Amino acid sequence: MKILIFSDIHGSTSLLDELIEHYSPDRIFGLGDFEVDEFILDLKDVVGVRGNSYFDPDYPIDRFIKINGINILLTHGHTHSVRGGVSSLVRYAKENGCDMAFYGHTHIAHLSKIDDMIVGNPGSLTLPYSPSYPTLIIMDIIEKNIDIKLINANTYEVIKEIKLEK
Image 1 (cartoon, rainbow, N blue to C red):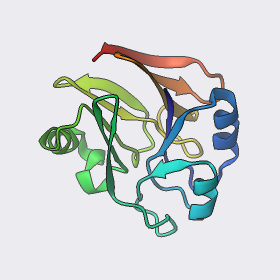
Image 2 (image 1 turned 30 degrees about the vertical axis):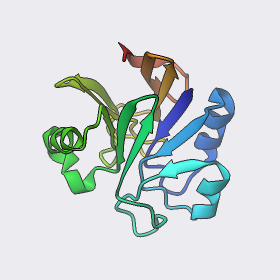
Image 3 (image 1 turned 135 degrees about the horizontal axis):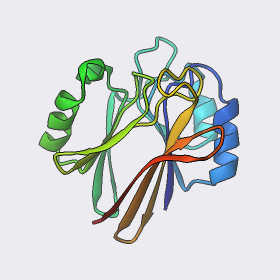
Image 4 (image 1 turned 30 degrees about the horizontal axis):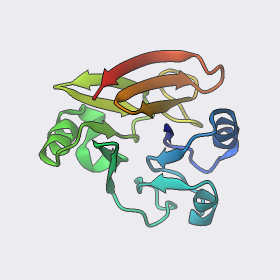
């Protein structure tokens, strides 16, 4: 199963459309600050969470998803104070039995393993802060093998990769 994870498109779906065509994902997770109508995201089969933009669809703030026995938290992150670090987010995810937590909000791409938990931020497709180019996360789950890649959305180059066996 291939999962495309993106965040913070702030009204522009053009690059997202290109990425969906390029990767042909089985699932698409959006982490808020979309600023587009919900029906546009529904057409793309986006499973989303609400960001802190007034123009976001009325999605839940946090969403818990289970895939192949992997518990995943999706959140925009503003309610978990991610601008000040991810310790609160990691604690919340662990309290809820999660193996992974993905967040947006900061526009800063991030992928790491913290206390046996994968924590990732796909950055922003339209207003990236760091790095200065658009980024996304692609996660491949094949049986017990998980491959998570932070990717430059312009060149498809892998910036960072974490491989796990669950």
